[in-house]
Structures are given as C-alpha cells and as structure tokens.
Length: 102
Image (cartoon, rainbow, N blue to C red; front, side, top):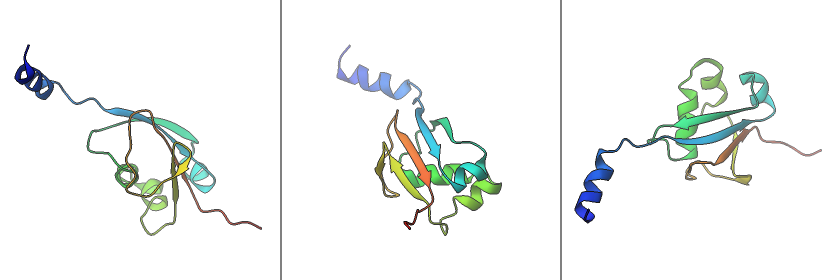
C-alpha cells in the first residue's frame, strides 16, 4: 500500500468522536443536577467555546446557565482556559462560576 492508498483509506473511514470528561462546580452542579459526565464529541466540537454551545443546545437550564452573557470560567486539564482553547480526546473540562475571596 503506497501513500495514495493510505490517504484514500483515511478518507473512507468514519471520523471517530473524541471522548472528554466534563465537570460542573458550584451553581452549575446544582442547576444541572450532576457533577460530571463523559461526552463523546462530534468532530466539529474542537474548542471550549464550541463545547459550551454544544451543551447550550440541550436547552432549558443548560441554555440559560451557559449563555454567553453569564460569566462562567473554564479549565482544561486543571489549567484555566480561554474560550478558544483546543480540546483533545481524554481532556477534562471544568465549568465553574467565578469565585470571590473573603
């Protein structure tokens, strides 16, 4: 099998979904009724922002709590992440409201 055969073979295979773990903290945990879930993402979901929109599409409380107007922080693999941060298979993504010290 030469390189052109490999390229054709790759094009014919279905693209596999990447599985990530999503964690919810504080208010989000209470509102969604769960603290974590494993999600198999379609290939089009490649960033934190795309994941947030994907979850918002569930509607109801998901749409309300993850609305772009609501301040929600994100961490990927326990490091603060921007909305454009890339996601990879096996990542752990945490969503949490901002916290204030006292």
